[in-house]
Image (cartoon, rainbow, N blue to C red; front, side, top):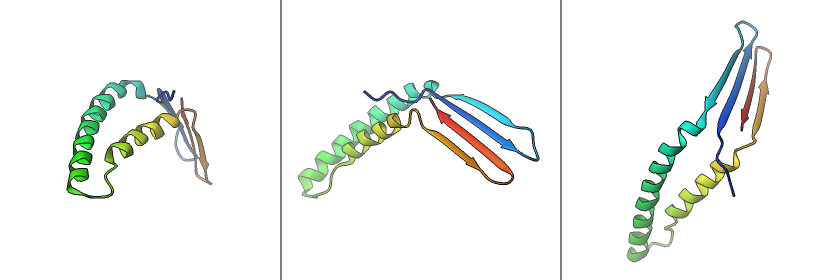
Length: 94
């Protein structure tokens, strides 16, 4: 089972400025995303049904939406490190 990310830990270090460390609680946004996702899924199912009745071949909007939420769930554990001469960015999704 995919568990959505709970926290985004972002560290930005610049040579000219003071380092910034942000801890963003993503779990606060999940109830809103769930409500919007359910409404979007209902609309996508209706659109898929209408396009199926009309005779269009490609009518997989609901599948696209479900797989998009699965992809968001797979981002948990992602670590990104980026650095150049002036800036270093570390991002961890937990």
